[in-house]
Amino acid sequence: AQAPAAGCGSATQPERVAVWPNAPGTMRLESIRYSPGSLQILNQLQLPEHCSYEALGSVQQASEAIRAMKVRGAPAIALVGCLSLAVELRAGAGGPGLASLVAFVQNQLRLLVAARPTAVNMARAARDLARVAAREAERKGATEETVRERVICFAEDMLEKDLKDNRNIGDLGARHLLEHTNPRGGKVTVLTHCNTGALATAGYGTALGVIRSLHEMGRLEHTFCTETRPYNQGARLTAFELVYEQIPATLITDSMAAAAMAHQGVSAVVVGADRVVANGDTANKIGTYQLAIVAKHHGIPFYVAAPSSSCDLQLETGREIVIEERPSQELTDLNGVRIAAQGIRVWNPAFDVTPHELITGGIITELGVFAPEELRAALSASVFSEGQ
Ligand code: MRU
Image (cartoon, rainbow, N blue to C red):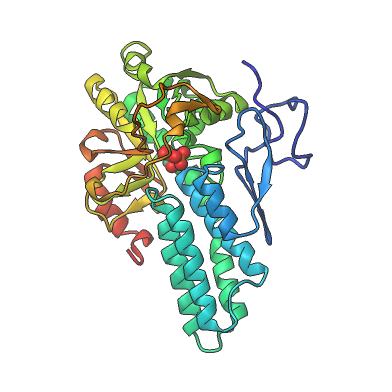
């Protein structure tokens, strides 16, 4: 296999490296580089050809990058959004005066939430951050400095938490999947959709984290990753991560998924989520729903892997989820070249909703693996429920 573009690892080296490192997989792929006062994102529009990092100095720049999908994936969107606010606040934005600082924070968060509506992570983080700012401002002795500091700390802690949650998701998901598909030992083959890896999160990934964990355990036979039309997150990003990490994998088009399940020994399907609602219905990348139907037909367990920050107990069913529609050019053009007939109408929903009854394997969170009907009770009993 051809090595993907070099230079995306976290080793201290120039951001663009002409030569593929000797030992691919030894460096961690990073979609977000943050240090206090500085935020950079890997421009995912240019992958896999180029690895170039772009500095984001403001919430405005971050929301433009999110809308343009330079950074994407539910957890990464929230992280970049909140960290861009941290960068602005460190530079002294907002105020003067406590009330005007809190209003500034709330306005900036509204801008970020509006960038992409389906994933709940940014909306949840915005609600939490707005509350943190307001509470601190009401505290006796609060100053602009303490309000800024509280918001910045909250945003910075999110990075570490997401990475930790992903590792737990990987571990819990891998163990559950092995127990339920291959209890007598041996290896498993997993089919996944879209990109849910290091590029979509603070690192490691959710569904791709489960695949990484299986690989680390020596229990992964093979991965099938779907191309994920129209934006091709599978072909461009997941395939990139799998090759980079030397995880055995094959790329298929979305329309090959049924054939793969019929003929390629797929043990389980594991996908991510943009929003899991109270009854377990799950919004994820367009095409997920059809994978769940096909998996059910073949008796193959279908798992959703997502941190609890992707769960939304305020919505009862998937019918309430707002589905983002993307520009028609994503379908009609490839790399700027028109491939569709002129004049054709286009429908381009970025996500679909998989009904909970099709999620037969379970919902893998950092808190445990739950059947969809158990999710509400399980999350309500945890720290997750604070403020729900
Ligand atoms: O449009 P995208 O690329 O942001 O969609 C991404 C997905 O649908 C992912 O499956 C989801 O966000 C989970 S990422 C851990």
